[in-house]
Length: 358
Image (cartoon, rainbow, N blue to C red; front, side, top):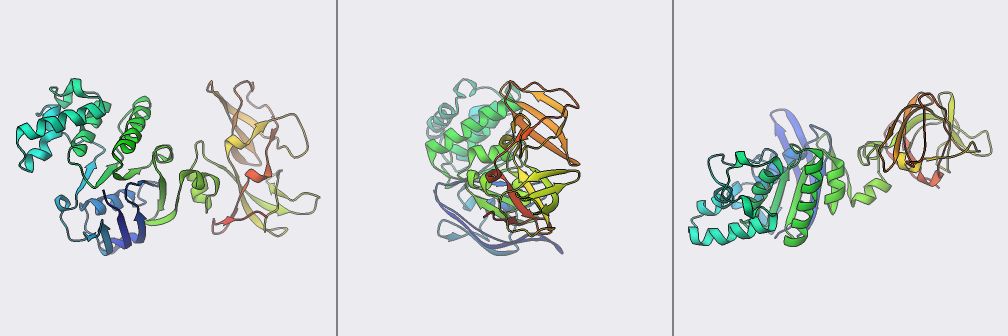
């Protein structure tokens, strides 16, 4: 195993800068997920760690070794790709053991390592099959097995679950988490799916436009996003954010949002100031008409069994509320939702940066 240090990493494609001086320390044995929208630079970062992209500037260390100019095979990393990258004419066993064969190991040495990897990944019954005879989830396990047998210092995953259906993604998330707990190998995982990042990683790194916007424990990013972008990106369904004007004329400050108002806590924003205020769908609760509640109008509702999603209109904005499954709703119905002002998030309208409540 090994730590990874990125110091001022830059990536240029001609005159276009894709990665802007990124610095990050990934600890030995840590599971770190890179997330962000398409084009944010997360896959480019991973490929530079793997040695598949040249580094334009800065220093990359794996363990105590600078690897900027080291070929991929000399970095002691194993990568699992989105498209599996299996050889269709080889059996599962041959695919898993191929890298060991290329290293010059004998068949008698390779076979027990392949069987052990298959046991860990629960694909022992498929060793003599070809990739075309397997499901997507089984093929992804074979790709992971090929990485495991190399006993690398670092595992790199490039959106490995994006080709799988929802049920298989959940199963494979569990498998990957179990694998990391078992092996303890330093892992870097790239995904556009923040749910994957939140459930798998010790630490999440949010990227945007080739910059790190925020990094930290998944719950830290959920509870205290440092900007509107992270607030809306982390969490599912995404955070509701309302833009409006602070009104301090009453006993309690509020945000004027179109023809509606939202009760505020104490925030450092002057009367008449423009402000963005966020609240997560799960922090809204159906209530009877009462002081401090908001009254959106239901447009669509989705009974999911475990809860009911209500998509509403509020002050000209769309609002999503995650409600108790016992709540019965109708389109165009005005409902009342209560909340705790401690659950509100405040952002500067111009910069999007977080403002702290008092």
